[in-house]
Every structure is written in structure tokens, then in C-alpha cells.
Amino acid sequence: MTKNLPKILFITASIITVGIFLLNFYLVGFGVFGDGLGYYTPLRSLIFDGDFRISDEYQYLANSASKFGGGLRVNNEIPEYSKYTMGVGLVLAPFYFLGHLFTLILNSLGWDIDANGLSWSYELFYCLGSIFLGISGLILAYKTAKIYFSPLTSALAVIGVWFATPLTFYLTLETSMSHAVSQFLISSFLYLCLTTSWIKLRKYQILMGLILGLAVLVRPQNILFASVPVLISLWQIFLLKNNPKINQEKEQILTEENKLNIKHNNSLIWTESKKYLISLIWLGSFSLLMLIPQILVYISQYGSLTNMPYMVEASERGHGSSFHWFQPQIFNVLFSGFRGLFIWHPLLLLAIIGLIISPKKIRPLNWILLIAFLLQVYFISSWWSWWQGASFGGRMFCNCSLIFTLGLASLWEQFKERKWLIYSSIITLFFMLWNGLLVMQYESAMIPPEEPISISQLYQNQLFVIPFFLNHVFNR
Image 1 (cartoon, rainbow, N blue to C red):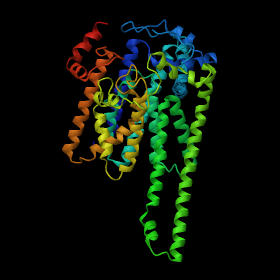
Image 2: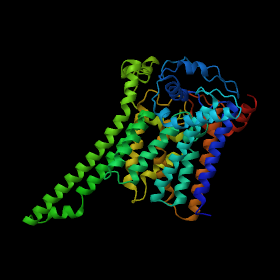
Image 3: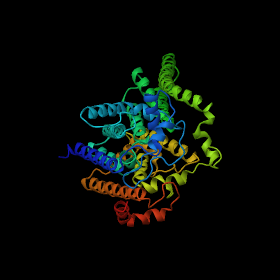
Image 4: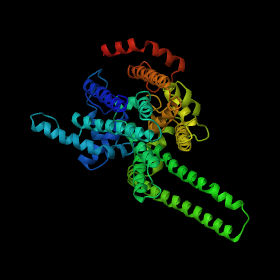
């Protein structure tokens, strides 16, 4: 039973995830809305119209409203172009084509569905593709953790990340957003980085470069994960330079033989350093190649990269520059009621503690991953919209899911006795329920989608959210 428990947990979690999505899709009548429209409509426009103008797609979708509450799908000004990058559409294009095939099959069986790229069947497969990739990313996180920790500990860590973090929301209710896809790509990148001999094999360098480039096309903040292979390379060079055998030879009397050994060792260090450098150049080059189409599209649409909506909207909204590098809101991003990561999702604070106190066998890697997480913190904290817009918790940290998994597994592994495994399971379950209540708060508008809220108000609402949510549901 214990041996099959991780598999049972994953199957159950997948059924729950897809079930919640399908129920919401059925009740609302569609799955793509909000920022998701900005990722979805360019794909449809490119395939059906041969361009990136999305105004006609938005006008078509503006005529639809939620069947469950009547909320309009498009309630803002209709744009000519999408401000969002093209990565999500590219990654989910195969699922979109499956939606087209599904539409044609249903029509051949007597259904009447417009095969126009905007019907519900296209959205269904597009969103299911996002869920599939998100779950695949979590499986990769589990496989990575299982290399260093027990299967049960690794599975418990993944389930915690699955249902007690912002990823929960974007795997079930807002699947057309970029976060599930981003999580999958970065988990794939880190999996290859941590589990393969990518430094020796060119095929892995190219593959990792392509994946990282695609991840940046999904969410530009993902470029910071390039720090992981760089730091791994520096760490390996450091270990080589501090090899006890090499240092011992340097301390010995400089006989002719020892001089030759030292010269050989220095040559070895330089050769290895050059190997790491060449590997990083290959990786970086293919990443940059992936970005060229997006750069050309932005220039053709806005004249220059400085005129991109993301670069000008801060000043248009009275926030000055887009990034405030010397005034990062680090404390607010992590510890405020206004989408503070550790306030909304306390289990992730335990994950970071786990990275810090991790076992020696994985400590260097965990600390490298901790640096990658801190770079994300700094980047998000420096952005003018550090609260991440209309966001369920710290949504921009979904890309760190594999890092959080290793952190939690590192923490739970400290307690190998059966009773401590039970305690860690109870803690995980508690924060899963906590996260579920927060979802109810957010979905029922008990808390505003993009307005500040205090920690005390956020926590007090947890006591009353169930009756509030039920009233909200049954009176729509």
C-alpha cells in the first residue's frame, strides 16, 4: 500500500483538479477570460487570419457572458494587439488543434459548433492542455525530489505544492493564464539541469536552451532561472580548484615532478572551466534564438521595445518607471496581506526553511535554487505592480514549484520517524484547507481582486468565508 501511495495520490489529485475545472467550465460556459484572452486570441488570429491583430477576436468574445452570474467576458477597451508574449499560445497550439479536430468530429456526428477557432470546444482543449502540462511539471518535480528523498516524502511535498500554493488556482479555475505552462517549462528546465549530464552532452545544452527560451516567451521573468546552470558551473569549478589532492601538491616542496603536477592541475582546471563556459554559451545562444521572433513582433507592432505596453503602462498609471530597482517591496511581496506569498501560503515559508536547513547531500543544489528564488523575489518586488495585479496570492511564484517541492521534501526528510510523517501530513492537509478557503474568499469577492487587504482582515475572513461563499454561489 505504501509503495503505491504516491501513485494513488497523483491520480486522485489529477481527478480532483480536472473535475473542478470541468465543473467551473460547465457552469460559466467558457474557460478563457481575463489575461488569458491576451494569450489565446493571438493564437487564433495567427491560425485563422494570418496576423496578430486581435480586435475582431475580442469583439466576438465581448458578446459572451458567464452563464453563472452574467459577468461579461470582455469589460475593458478592445486592443488591436496583445501586450502579452506569444509563448503560451505556441506551447498550447497542439491542444488547440485537437480542439479543432474535436469540433469537426462532433459536427460530423450531428452537432452544430462553429469551427471558427473561438467556440467552446477550442477553449476546452486549450485549457485542458494547460492543466496537462501543469500536472506534468509537478510529476517532474516529484521525479527530481525522489532522487534525493523517499518517494513518500517527495509525494507529500508535491501534493502540498499542488493544493496549498497559488498554483492551485491556476490549475483549476484560471487555466488560460500563463502560470501552469510557465511552471511546466521551468520544472522541465530545472529537471534537466539537476538530473542530466548537460555539461558533457550538447543535445541537453540545446534542449535546455530551447526550453528556457520558450519559458521566457511565456513569462519574461523566467530568464532569471539561467542563474541555475551558471551557479552550478561556478560551484563545480570551485570544487575542482579546492580539490584536497591539488592543494596538497601545491603545499609540497616544489620538486620538478610536483611542478609538472601543478602545471597539469592548473591546465585541468582551465580545461574544465572552458568546458562549462562553452556549455553555457550553447545554452544561452539557443535561448536567445527563441526570443528573436517575439522581439520582431513587438517592434513591428509598437515601433520599438520601449513602446511596449508593459514598458509604458506604469507611467500611464502614475507609478513612474516600470521597475524600481533601488526600492524593491520585498517585505510586502512576502509578508503583507496584499498578496504576500508567505501570508497567503504559509506552507511555502516552510519550503524555504527546508532549503536552508537541507541535508548535506543536496545542500549546495538547494542553496543554488534558493538564490534563484531570491532573484524572483527581487524582480517581482522591483516591478511597479509588485502585488501582481488581480492575483490569487503570489501567482508570479508558480514557476518556483520545483524549488518549493525540494524545500518541503528536505524539511519533511529531517523527521523520518513515522509519527513525524503523520505530523507533516497533517500540516500539509491543514494548509491545503487553508488555501481552499482563500480560493473561496477570492472567488466570492469577499476580498477585492486588486485592492489592498490587511493580514487581520484576510485571516478573520477565513472564519466566515464558507457561509459567505455558499450565499454567493446560490444567489447568483
